[in-house]
Image (cartoon, rainbow, N blue to C red):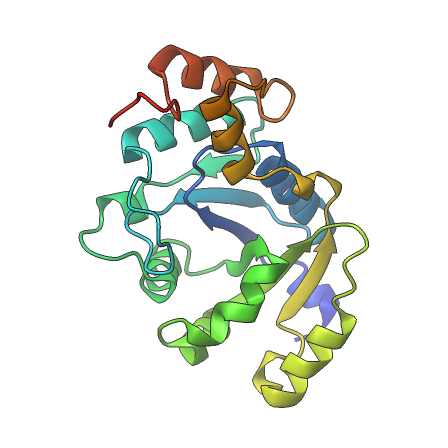
Length: 213
């Protein structure tokens, strides 16, 4: 399919993660991917029980969902789905993509994630099927040279050629882990995430040492 014909197909961006909490790094990556890859929409999908996470204290799904809603409310190109939260058991990407393929059969799917996560995708369940259903956009911090890594992947896994892309995102120096740590220690988090999300965290006492969900 030529680029001209391919450009006529709607492209759906998929932003998965725990979003605990969502922050400007996530939002900037989603917006830059939307612009650079001509995505008609970016769908945020908070994970239910992620198989690759060791944390047993992931914040309540309802809280994480509402924080995303507050963060994306002013961007009509952003949406949110409770697809993984409503599914019982572990949240596997291949199951999510199959469900999205059924909901958006005419769309091309683009999975947006951190470039470091791409190092792990070959440990994911049914990765060969995943690569058939979606292309990957790996968001990287400025100065991170991913060219050697990309060549290694393509050499070892020829099926990934043209299906894994890199995108440099300045705000990725922000992390959910750091934000949770800052709240726990009483440090400010203003300007690291949208103000409605900061107020929600404050209102519900999230991430504080004495907070038990």
